[in-house]
Length: 84
Image 1 (cartoon, rainbow, N blue to C red):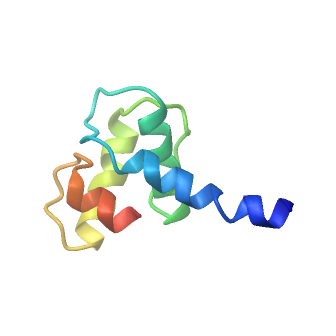
Image 2: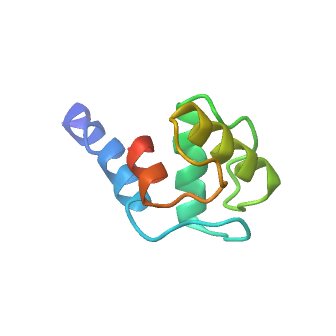
């Protein structure tokens, strides 16, 4: 039963990232999910604190550049799609 429940955890994390654009200055659960997703991909070494500050912005820009996206530091639809 536990193994079945664990299969749904990544889907829940992805669902949180499928919402609105997340920008520098934002705070909250969506930012934490973004930071975790970036950390899992090897692009975020900072805290998972729910604050979209300079470290998260740099992490997003590095991920965007790696994925061939415009490195603007804003986690919009294309960035989130690549992270999901």
